[in-house]
Amino acid sequence: LCVYSQLHVNELPSGGLEIEVSGAGAEGIPHDDTNLIVRTVAHVYADVDRSMPGLRIVAENGVPHGRGLGSSGAAVAAGILVAKGLLEGDIEISDADMLRLATEIEGHPDNVAPALFGGLTIAWVGERGPQHKKLLVHRGVSPLVLVPAYTMSTSKARSLQPPQVSTADAVFNVSRSALLIAALTQSPELLFDATADRLHQDYRAEAMPETQRLVQALRSAGFAAVVSGAGPSVLVLADG
Image (cartoon, rainbow, N blue to C red; front, side, top):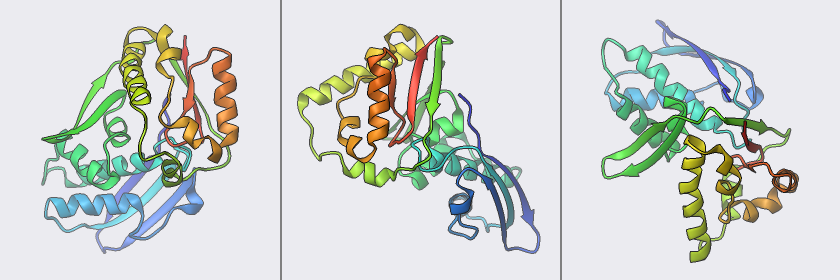
């Protein structure tokens, strides 16, 4: 599964900002300094104490927006890489710095880490800040994403979850998280059990009933189907 948004960026010697956007969600993307990519570039320049140049950005969006596919994380990662490229030869930005800067913008490393580094990426925040570990996915795992026409607000989806959960449900999901790593890297036949969930999908079902019905139908047929991110897309991790 490879879905990309592509950027072509040039410095403008005269300053200013020019933005052209095509593809997924183009009509809703701002063309001023509130643009997420522009804000990310500006954040990097401020972090390294450099003045941000004028920019011309031509964006071709391949990642659908508002579908639970990490479009904001992809935009942040793109902004980080743009800044890294523009600053090359003056300031060197390490992988650790890229992840730190991206996490500062996104608020968590979950989406920006795989967008920056690719593959199956475990991300966490520790005493040294955001960290990541990239793992190889078993070649028997075949991901499929089913993307609906409607969108879902991540904040709305999160608001439907209770502030507290039972110990039993928490333990259930922790065990499945560990099992999922084994399934994705070594034993794809375990994907169905590994994708069972008690912490977020059922609580959010009322906001996306079509998604819930599709997940239930696919799982009843034996497929490892889950809500992708905050939804409403459905991710199927097929075995073979």
